[in-house]
Image (cartoon, rainbow, N blue to C red):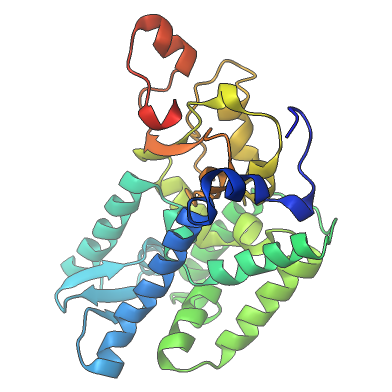
Length: 307
């Protein structure tokens, strides 16, 4: 494609498939779906096969029957609500999950573990295919107000009130124990994202996403654009990215930023890596955060997969 020519929506991803092959053009998407479905299967192994790898649900579970895992948003609600049961096990479960996502990237939960992501991704795919444009203009900061509202509600009611309506909890419980309100939540979110607001729930409202973003603000694992000099401005990465505002600082370096996507809003989904036929992006660590040309000048080794 000619540099500076935006790829038509109907041709999105074709260049990557032609240049890299189908699997390489969808490698990280396949890995994410495998992770999301695999996590659900680990929970189902107990009820179906009697072998309990993960027991409970995404909010509160045990790994292999003795390692506690507690979602940080549930822990904060318990703390704010002054609930009983704040045992050492509860603190340990929350600490394990928090430390894990602080290391690898908080919103990795959103793209690699959360089952709702499959629904919202499908919605954005259909928006693109049907060329549905426009919709409500929402501010991404709204999710932080939602997070505050969840914690204030817990403090005022002394309960885990949000868990009664949390789409993630409803969906996961529905898959494991049978759908009820889970169907209502999924259909509602799908319709909302498809018809009213692009990336409406995950990108603007979800308080869990807000909290995981804060947790992963300084995580080690990041998407890097070390080969950004190869960018032909096709804009395909912007189109597939659920948080497209995270790309420009690393890709275009308007203010002299390095090539690492540092925004805590990034979900580390890898779609920009998949779809870029020029190999601009790859997974790496946040350091060093200097441009490829600066590395070459200093004699520092350039990442092989960014060459």
